Length: 286
Length: 193
Image (cartoon, rainbow over all chains, first blue to last red; front, top):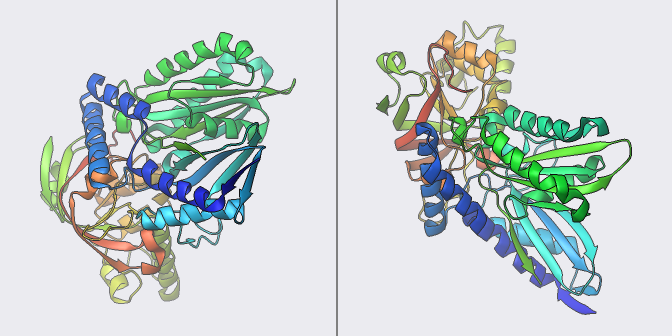
């Protein structure tokens, strides 16, 4: 049994809120730079040039990359040999979000109720997903999610007969419908399988994985088709000519990340979680 | 074409500016997004109901002078923006555009009252496109997710109304060389939206 103090959780979450809003992960940055170098559409290239400069300013002057500093989505893997001490676990996460968004001069974008819509003033509560795993460590992934892209996300309850083509059509439909609204070049999180809510969670989790990756509950089963599906989706999305900022060009997406889970004999749930080019996620292990 | 524009738009500007033109805006713009739009829209409709008037026979000046709207919308440009808080010494925090389509419900009325332009990102409804054409207005796109870069073009910022809305308050801002692309011109011709 190992003890993790809630104050350490709070401090870690605070730092991750701030860091994730100022710096992109290396794989995201590299993909954006690559797009900037290789885009041929004049307006699209101009947008990418602005995004590159924007990243430099954000890092150098500590100004958030985007004004939508998101709702704080937190994935926590709790080792079953961890004992959490010092107070409530979820309160510790929320206190970290509160401190991060307040002390980091981040935007408070959370309202208390979908209809009443009064701002909670400190960007809490976070959206917390926990998973109990083996071991004695606690892994926290923090992914602030902006809603320009979140609003363009979809769940499709496909039928088994729809097959790979059904999956492709649904993902392409979601990306086309999103068009310029989701701030392309986008990252597309694809969750396949599970049930209704599991597919959505897989799609969100996919966004926190390395760029252009495939993960499956049974990798050895899924990889036969999934690696090709990932590549095909990347190419077909980039052939849509939505382009950077929706201005046209060959970089509509920077990446497609897929997560797969077993499902029911009667179904094939598919979720598409759209994310803008500011795909923010950081991880720490306590 | 690229144009440097001094706001408010002149009739000549409105006429020459076409979709896909790149504009560098100089002058005053106002931030307003979802909650500020809803509040103005509800207040205007309440006033119209109370006075028995319609958008055709009421002016923005009248609405402003009667305290219905916090700004006289005539000839103004709204920026769909909710910035991050300014740190000490900063004019404003990160300040990029939000998705325009959420304002579609409110926009035709504001255009009919004399609003001259909007800066945002993404698609607009057919109703908005028709209202843009009817009123000879302009819809401009700023680069989504370039909030740090765009903040550099904002030289002053002051909350002038709806302070209680926090980031959604209405700000009066002076901008210099603020880069936008024309997505719907005054003829109602749209570029990829």
